Image 1 (tube, rainbow, N blue to C red):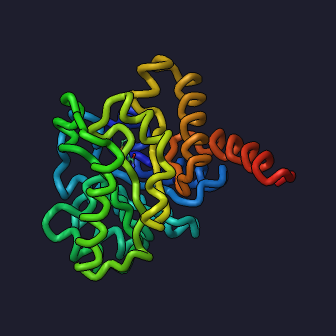
Image 2 (image 1 turned 60 degrees about the vertical axis):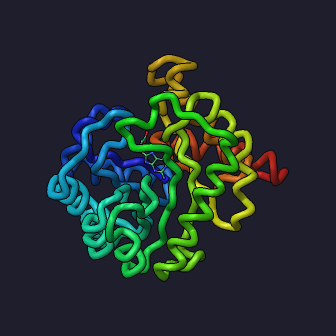
Length: 261
Ligand code: 7PJ
């Protein structure tokens, strides 16, 4: 899953892709680099980010989704918590709703159910404005599993069958660096839900804190963490560096399957 930020304050690409043209071009480049999914997001959820109005979120993401759809068959996801954005994204040809708030906003469950789309449920402790204020857990994995159980049953009750669900433990969303290490290390424990596991580690602050905020080290750190997540059971990796991640996964698959692929 390639990340396509269409936010002017996006921290990882400096907002260079706010222009719709550049965003569509970047999406198609990621498709060439073998992204299976392009994740289009118009709300920055970096810690402490400002919230965005519905109209500006719609203006940012809908034209980009429409134009990706016109130019490619790639699976498109929309990174949003806003039901109206979900609804219009579905009409524009989007395939997946990726909601860091797991359909908690009013009307989101109903809208997602009616859309018929696949939904990614992500764990976040708190809200982007406060989630990094000393997050604590009794047992990290148990607490996230409890959260998934609750959201999966809310989805089922709203008519979203489990074959439309993907789960994501939310690396960096209300977690310390140690929590993030534990998440990746114990990712296999989430397999018991029988749902595909998605994870996004790419260029997040945990990696920056270890290696520094430099283009090359961020890439290497992100690819390394993504690869370990994949080996531990992640089926979808949300990444900025598609080409490098695909190369890394390919080497891993050659080794795991003991054949040239
Ligand atoms: C994630 C996301 C993630 C899912 C963002 C960033 C912040 N969606 N949207 N999982 N992160 N499902 O890219 O650093 O980890 S936005």
